[in-house]
Amino acid sequence: AITVTFYKTFQFSRLGVGQFGAAEVILGTWLGGEADEAVRHAGERRFVLARVLQAVFSGLRAKPGAPDFAEELGRQTAMTELTQLSRRMRILEVIVQGAPMLGLLGTVIGMIDAFSTLAAADGTVDPTLLASGIWTALTTTAAGLAIALITYFAATWLEGRIDSERQAMETLISAAIHGRVDGEAAG
Image 1 (cartoon, rainbow, N blue to C red):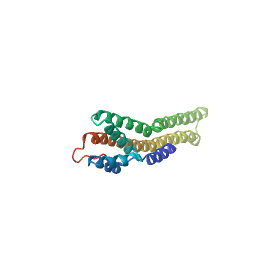
Image 2 (tube, rainbow, N blue to C red):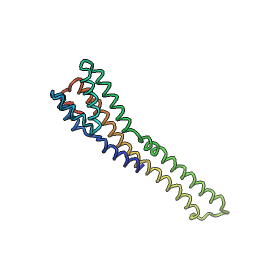
Image 3 (cartoon, rainbow, N blue to C red):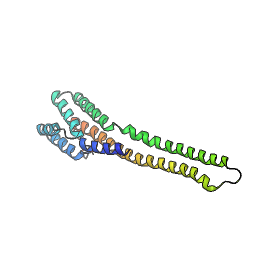
Image 4 (cartoon, rainbow, N blue to C red):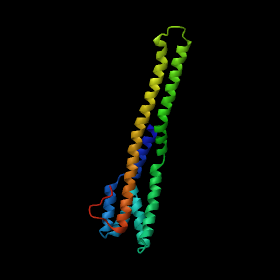
């Protein structure tokens, strides 16, 4: 979980996730009538949203009378980018679901140990003999839940960043093709 979280954080940084302001500048340049300048900046493709805008601009320039073509190019690029951003997120989901199960398995093993100690004792049972099995049961439960909770928060944070990027892509594609509604912004 730690490795995947660090990997995804590094990947998001390398791919330029969250560059909403820079995308807005490119879009504003496009909508302001400076198409060549907007295409040049988007063509540098240093971040996810610029690559999506570059695809839309290419479509609008290639077929000026067919906004559906530009929209489709933008959506295809967005899907490619989102697929890359979502890669390895399933590992975190598996950890979130599997860690409590492993904790529960440890709980059952600990309780089996405690009850086997109880069954082997003739007559009075020394509580210290049961303590080992109970300690195992509680420790594994706590460890499983702690791992699941920490991973859940990391996965939720990463998914939130992907969702923000997805929403920004949709807004930028629409605004680049159809113009902007007053007060609308990508991020």
